[in-house]
Length: 88
Image (cartoon, rainbow, N blue to C red; front, side):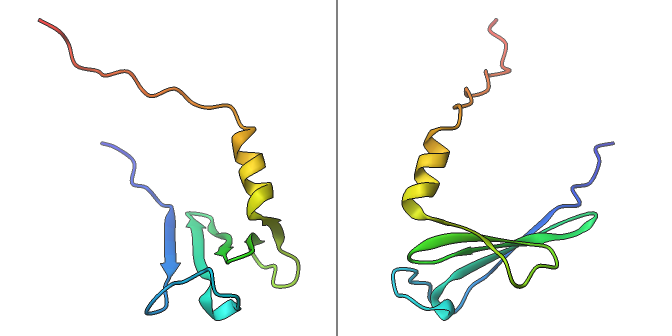
């Protein structure tokens, strides 16, 4: 029997989301939880992306969009998984 996934990702969305408008009320917040409890929140806004670690309401790990793109493009790309189908 496969193990059940204990991770949870919840997005808190207002009626509409337009992150191009400045202001905290327009940001998209995603809460990340694992079996061990809350891991943090990811806040996506017009000027930056911020990771708020669990139990931290003061200091976020914040990066601008251009810096985030630089970080992600610098990561090694993963290859697509090979098909598991057999040829007869």
